[in-house]
Image (cartoon, rainbow, N blue to C red):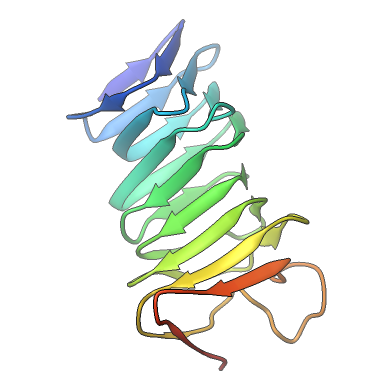
Length: 171
């Protein structure tokens, strides 16, 4: 376990061999620089998780991302390498998923990208400049990420892109 305690840690390069669990304690911060990358199985934020300068946080398959305090998305990207659990409230910039995740009530202001194996199991909220990108490279059945029965509100992205020879099917 890696515990960020009583100080600020800034990630400006690639952090490898991180223990499975990262905990940011109250009064502490984990800050990402534009080129900062970190991969963890479980990340629990009780302090400040700051991606205002960019960077990439990857949650490994089967991992958990928990926010109990301050999360600043900035221009950063959160990648879910496989299915994962998302706890707490988030306003994300960019999210990429390669497994099933729940974004129940969480907001995406940038790009929500669904790759092969990815799915969204609960309705996200989208910002006014958001893009929902289907990038599975095969047939994808629309789930909770796009509520086509709604014309606005929860589950309705501002833009939709279908890339990588993906075929989108509405249920």
